[in-house]
Image (tube, rainbow, N blue to C red):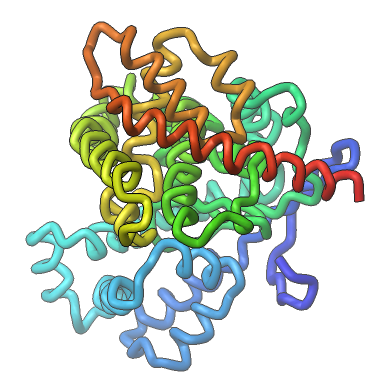
Length: 364
């Protein structure tokens, strides 16, 4: 949070050497203030909505999770969920299993539970030590340290969590439900993004940057998914959803990616896919698909030490997957020789210079 932001509630300081955590619940409190007005059958005006969206945690979360049309639909779902005069429409939308209405109805029905969780978390976040412990399992020794001045915030919209330079933002539903199989796994996943050493490829040739970004996102989410998705996959309540979301379609995605790599290697001067192509290829998951599938196979074949040793290198992640996939009895897809050769060329071209640039920044 920026210092100028109005923090209605700033609680939960945890002392650590050279590190402190703050928990901000302003966005969630503002949601319930808005819901209280809607329960009086007041319309959700543009001014009311603009004030809600302007809360810093809401603004950051919305920018990361919602597209413009999605946000408009979500706003309507909030209004219908709480206004008594629109109750018949709410019931119809719930009967049709419309996701935004189902989600907001959970926030409505579970408000006492969510408020109690928020109060307890703000007073003393019980997961802070645990989230670091869980995240460290999938980090090299040099990255096992607390995040200085970590900012944590909670919102009462959506069902997701984000990790950015400014800190972590959790939806209340995800914070409660995603942790049911094992406490702290959601927070550990998000703080892993803060701690994993990464490289800056902004200096790369413009034609290579979309692919480099796509490979980076796959590594970034795939390794972090070993913290929480692996646990959820063992949970009877979550396993079917995780399988359908991240595992069932992964082989098809890998085959398509292999085709793209082959085509790029064969015609280096031809037009290349933009980043939005790779986002569509991963079903908008920003790397969870096929990242978790790949990381799971790497882990299954005992290559965690090699994975952590090259945790900043997206090409190494794909090449290590290739090595693990060839050994795996389930016969997952492997990349063609042309694709492997192309990944090695990208690795040789960019990893050394990126690491040198990072070392110069550290020295400064």
